[in-house]
Every structure is written in C-alpha cells, then in structure tokens.
Length: 490
Image 1 (tube, rainbow, N blue to C red):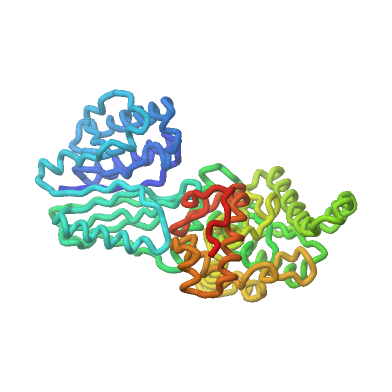
Image 2: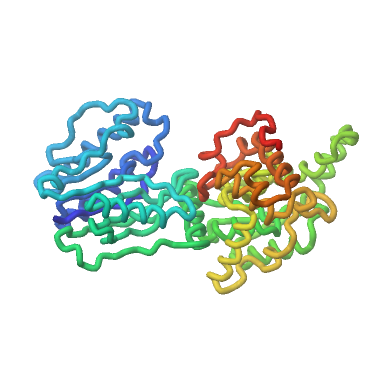
C-alpha cells in the first residue's frame, strides 16, 4: 500500500491559496499511484485559527474548500485524509460545522488502513518549534511505535504564522521504532512511501542543531511574516551594536539585501566606533545605509521641555530613543516598509528598553533570544559565512544604549552572563526565586532581577510581536498580569 504525506505551509484564511497547495499534493499522489494522501491539520484554513472558528463565514469557507477538493479524487482510488476527515470520491456530507468542530472532533484513521489490516497511529500536528525539543519529539515517536507495535505517521505543517513556527519534520516510523522517512525542517515537502516495501532507501532529512536551527527558524519567521503580509521592504535602525547587527544579518538572509534598507541615527552621545561599525556591517551585507543625525531634534525637545528640569533626568535619555522611533516609523510609512524591532529577550525581560522608541516595529525577530544567545548566534553566522559579516568589534565591545556620556548597559543592569542565567532558570525552566538563590547564590542580585522582571510587565504588553524560540516565550506562554505585588520576596 502506497501512502503520500504532504507538508504544507498555508496562509491563514486564504482558502484559494491553500486549496491550490492541497490540489498540487493530490496530483502528485495520483502521479505516484498512492492509495492514501495525508494532509496536516490546518492546511485548509491555516493555523492557528483562534476566534476565526467562531465565524460562520470562516467555517463555511473551510467546508466549501474541502468539498471542492473532494472532487479531485473522482474516478480514482485515492483516499485523501484532510482536517481529520477522510475525503472520498463522492465528497463530504454538506453539513455546516459548529464552532470548534474541527478542533474537537476525533481523527479517525482512513478506512483503507482498516481494510488492509494495518495498525496505524496518525498524528496531524501542528507541531510548534521550541529549541532543544525536536530530538525529544523524535524519541517519543519511536517509543510510541515500539510500544504499540504500530506504524506512526507524524504529519505536520511547515513555516510560520505570526509568532509561531511549525517545524515540519513530518515522519513515518515503523513498528520496530525505525524512521522510514523524515521530511525537511520548516519547509514544504512531499513523499510517497510503499508500506509493503519498507526497506527502500527513502530520504531522512537532517534536523538542524545548535545555533543553526535557531538561525534557520528566525530567518523563516521573518520571511513568512514579510511575504504573507505582502510587505515590499524591510527597514532596520542600526546602532553599531550587536542586536541590530544580528537582526539586519538575519533579515538579509530572509528576504535578500535588495529588499532591505538601514538607517543610522546618531546623537551627540554616539561614538565614532558606532558609526564605523554600522557602516561596516551594512557594507558587508550590501545594504544601503542612510545617516540622519538627531541632535537638532533632541535640542528642540530639551528647549521646549525645559520645565521638566527638576524632574527625573531619564526623560532626556529616553526622548532620544523616541525621536529615533518617530523617524524610523515615518520612513516606514513613506516607503511601506516593515520595521524590525531589535530588542532581545534579556532587555525585554527587565524593561531595559524605551516604549515608543527602540521598541517600535511590526516584528521583533530576536525577542526570544537572551543576550548571551545573541552573541553566540553572531559568532555562528561569521563562522558559517567564513568571514566577518558582523564585525568582531561589534560583538566584543561593551553593550551601550549611548543615551548619555560613557554609558554602558551594565551601569544599570547586572552582568549579562549572570542575568541571563537567572532569566533562563525562571522564565524558561520555571524555577522560583528561592530555588535560583539556592542554586546560584547572590540573593540581592536575584531579587533585583525578579523585581525588574515583574515591574516591566506593562512594557512587554506593548511590544512588537516576536518569534517563539524557547519553551516559554513572552506573549504566547507568559500569562501574568501587569499589576502584581512582589510575591517573590524572601
């Protein structure tokens, strides 16, 4: 018996686009004389549907698309398994689904499996990417197959929708727990296998590891958001620092340098090193760079707001970031560009960012990468390209917002290595304050980090959408109100 599996990257709500993807898979399966074609859950509508499933029109669109595709199997023996239903040549029953039906129904196996006396488990995903998770999922599939002495079909979506990355890696595992085939990571793919000839050499795609899987994932997240939302250009504000350098490099790989522009917005506190690093970065990536000094804007604010002289002087620093944000968004409005915010997870966690300033943007590609992970990924990119795409001095110089004379980040924050340790243990591994203190010591610093983290909740609720990389991502996985007392005090 021949079975085809199709790994599809759908567009949420674009039924015509998705139908063509499925139709192409049907035609491939027919060409390869398959008996069954299995399509991942969400391929017709896109995923996640969220509250769209409460819409009568949306559900009607799903039903009409499925019924239209049923006609693709007229006068042939192909059984198509789609959205948890078996689509036969006579089409589906034309009953209107209720809200949530597609999410709650059981997923029966295609009847042809039963006719042929095959013991099969079918998992239709979608499988969401988390770093260090792919290998664990592979082990689960092997154990399930061996425990049940059954074939296991793991059929998943590929690509990205908003914050979420779908891994692909669709697989067929034999009852002995061996991989018959594995499709590509995060990209669309298709294969037909003959279960009666399991010893044929079917392709088993590699799973990227380490920094490579993080790079590939973020690049795909940028690319799909850019294309599915019909942007024509990307705009990045580069500072000469490591975060904006990484974002620009990843964006260049995602959409090509010809579709990107960069702007450098120096103030009186910007060093010549920053200018040189911004220029070198853009030259390395072949991205055009425009420099717009902000001193005159800044001085006008200082003059007009001189009545704030007796207040907290932090406004003089933050107004620079907000001037930059206004300029960047103005350029984006004029050019129709997608602005990429450049903040990392560490800064976002402790509120070391300026609302309506450096937080401006439609997508924040590295918002789920800790500062130390940013540094590691920069070094990996240079290693991979076998040249300094991101200048070494950008990676090694002390990070600074350059909003006052001789400022460095660690004037205001704990050491990044220790800070990231604490944030990783709490935000991603779920350890409580006292557990982290027991493990790392330095009670006062841990308490300070927790205080910064929970005092900054209101900022995180107003930031650009990020791309989920970790097990616990601010946004999708972080459901904590802004108004909460310091419950973690020892």
